[in-house]
Length: 263
Ligand SMILES: [Zn+2]
Image (cartoon, rainbow, N blue to C red; front, side):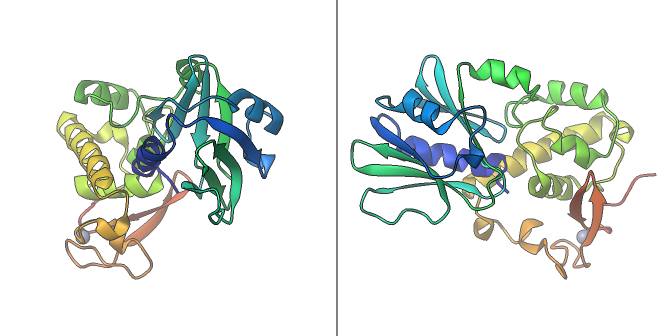
């Protein structure tokens, strides 16, 4: 499921391929992923314009077509982008196709269809309406500690709460907690300044390194949790079998030895 590092990769991909090309047409193959916009409105809004720049906030990607017109992309569980030549093979689960005048196309491919495309007038207004927290890579230590001190609950649920910090999902929350050596169910109010600082540093480190690795699990060092995060997987630190637990409705993977629960 695309989290901050994956969406950052999509941003860079779109920036490198699809900016400044005139949009000849928008072909909606499946309107299910359109949010508050019809296929006709989407095509009418974008036809003749160009994507000029983009901006990412958490797991959302916003592409500017005009001062008052932005396309919002959310990748849901299986969303991705593919830019290809007009005579090339259209990706199998293409839901929306942006057709450029340069004989290239950009496909929004999404097998499971949890993704969303929407037209917006104002990005900041959208962020406010959704009450999204600051982007996980835009947080300062002071703000991070202040915000976390105001909340109660399992540290993993807090990290994944988009209204507090935008961009972290199930996978990277586990990776961050593994690095910080914290049990995912740790009550946030039990963490003092030192522990919160450690958590903050782990958050930045893991997200930044994931971007450097192009959000590709095969490029991550074996000392990370992700390459071992599966049934029978062993802790890369101590060799003990990894544990799972349901926290905040999602399956957490962790090492019960290296990430002891504080009591
Ligand atoms: Zn361990």
